[in-house]
Amino acid sequence: MSTPAVNTSTTTGSLPPNSIRGAARRGVLARPGLEAIENKGWLRAHKWLLLRRASQLGILALFLLGPWFGWWVVKGNLASSLTLGVLPLTDPFLIVQQLATGQWPYREALIGGGIVLAFYLLLGGRLFCSWVCPVNLVTDAAAWLRRRLGLKGGKAPAAKTRYWLLGFVLVIAAATGSLAWEWVNPVSMFHRGLIFGFGLSWGIVGGIFFYDLLIAPRGWCGHLCPQGAFYGLIGRTAVLRVSANRRSACNDCMDCFAVCPEPQVIRPALKGVGQDHPLILDGDCTTCGRCIDVCGKDVFRISTRFDRSES
Amino acid sequence: MSDIQDTTDRAPAGAGPAPRGTTTSRRRFLKDAAGVAGGAGLLALGAGLYAKQASALPATAIRPPGALAEADFLAACVRCGLCVRDCPYDTLKLARLGDGVATGTPYFEARDIPCEMCEDIPCVVACPTGALDRSLTDIGEARMGLAVLIDQETCLNFLGLRCDVCYRVCPVIDKAITLERVHNPRSDRHAMLLPTVHSDHCTGCGKCEKSCVLPGESAIKVLPAKLAQGSRAEHYRRGWEEKDAAGGSLIGEQVELPVRGLEGKAFGDTRVGPGEGPGSAPVPSSAPAGLDSGWKP
Ligand code: SF4
Ligand code: SF4
Ligand code: SF4
Ligand code: SF4
Image (cartoon, rainbow over all chains, first blue to last red; front, top):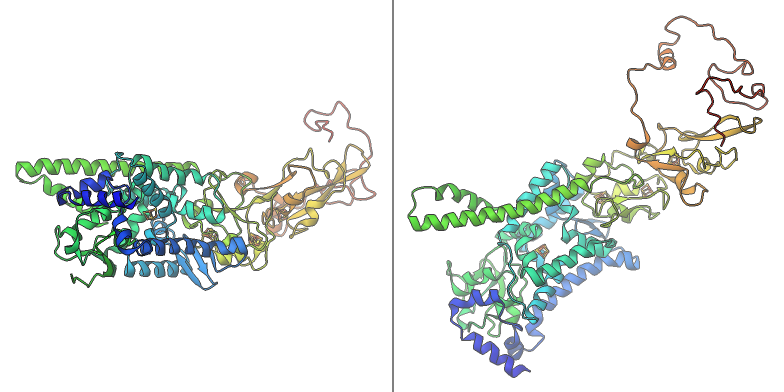
């Protein structure tokens, strides 16, 4: 099974670099990362993915220990929680919406929001998306299935839509004087549903899965989700960054483009378009590390925004 | 937000003296941006309208103690469920999509599990956002709703029996709910003890509704104050209140004629005590319409 697969990646690898974006968009690669598995072994070729799943599921498990086993490590949900009875954590996206409605929350919520905000400001806003948000499991699954089924076409709205939506979410909060987005926000609905019971919220989660699978590739997280947009804005100055520091070794196999949830962020760093250093500084990068995994040439690594070195 | 600003900032520049080629591409860019913004706006507008439309609270859904007025509550509550977790009686729950209550907000249904009126009000203490107001420190001051004896046709006490359960379970017994003794016109020799709720003490905890012995629906129900209460007619002066406030009648002492059979009772008090009661003459059928509908429980 592996021999023809390597062939695929070498043939696609010989495509001229200027077709990279188009090819990635069209999703020609059904199984990116085969060369990496060949070179580094399955485990190392899935290192960041496994760590990420462990983080996502581990956080979920902490929330579920209470309701399932009566062991209350963390109470509440991602909107606001209390850990071990002392550490408040609140989603700053909700605090911002709340302030837009004209409500001033209690100190706990503000402190909790401050802690979360500081964490993501420092380490990378969209770490939330790839390491915490449960919807990522759904959209990753849709993207995976889309690749495997070789589904092509579909049309995603412009990637900027999410920033407009974020703006309008705040406008609507101010206009209606209520947290209007929370009526439909699939992110909080999914997490709350897992912990407090779903009702019909499954429908919304299923809707996102099928939207991503059939209508818009990476449509929700990559183009629409205002919560992701919010964390993307926070992440503009984050220290933790992915660097294509061995980009000279790139053989244009395009596996990284095929797995990246935000493929547009790779090109400047990997191909030196509009910048000379190999750092992915775009706030939309979720620092998921999947590009590191699937690269058979070890081009990428996690680094800091101050490390512009290349080797 | 810089992306959004970028697009808007560039808009006027595009209209300036630019070479023809870039003008077209800018125009297309503007058109695209307008489309994106329009789409996002529509999506948000849909969410907003849906939220507005879905914000009506069903009458049987009661907010936790200390909840802000509904409109403010919907602005403050982040739907974290910390109040739910700290309620020792599992009274509170977070609304799920389809429950008819704003998704994710805490509420309870009294007939299901009522609020036990915890002295330390842990739900309020747990709320990090102020959706449950911490200025509520005495649970007796909570106003989650107001109990209403809603069905006089099935309430056992209204039928002349001595059920009294709603009265007995009330944590604010004898203040929030009293038994008012009135003559039972059906047997004509018994009293009826009518459970009567008083809004100045009822917290809306729902214990009465929970324990009503009727199968299925309760005859006494906690409703939102808005449904349970009429607005007070401020232009009517209540003579007896004015009299109390003034320390005496404002129009001089009046001659109050005794009512036959009710001698020795306060004027207007028609409740029947033991050994009291008017002569058992039935109401003549010639009585003016509207005095006695002839309704028999
Ligand atoms: S974009 Fe939204 S849904 Fe996707 S991972 Fe980020 S917060 Fe979650
Ligand atoms: S007062 Fe006690 S029983 Fe009532 S809702 Fe709060 S925690 Fe639950
Ligand atoms: S604790 Fe406060 S913010 Fe959280 S669900 Fe309850 S009322 Fe809402
Ligand atoms: S709701 Fe019923 S039990 Fe609770 S205070 Fe009011 S009358 Fe008493």
